Amino acid sequence: MAKYKFTNEYEIRASTKMLYPYLSTPAGLQDWFADKVITEDKLYHFEWDDEIHTGRIVSQRVNKSIKFEFEEEGEGRPSYIEFKLEANEMTESSFLKITDYSSANNEEDLHKFWDGLVGNLRELVGG
Image 1 (cartoon, rainbow, N blue to C red):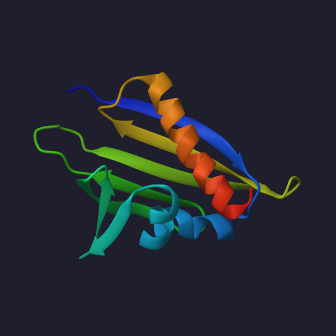
Image 2: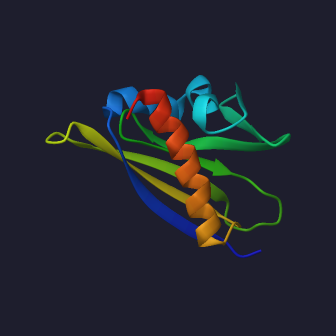
């Protein structure tokens, strides 16, 4: 199955230090991103709608970025989700850039999906 790369950027009125734990810890990710997140031997098990997807961190810069790679049998290049944070000192907000490289290929649906998730995150951090 072909892969599609979706990228979007969101402004969130919170510092990168405040946001980063929501992108990098099981408890933080479970608050807005997945139904359940469990770590085991450096693997992250994300549960959505009773389906478990296993990813591992392939790159990480504290308060800057994190990238989870998901292995899928017979898919060739692995899928991944990458979160990058950039601070704007003038507005005291941060920009969250999301890259979703997966078999999901309907751009409109992906926009709605990520807009909803980031809306949940904004509610949590008050931004």
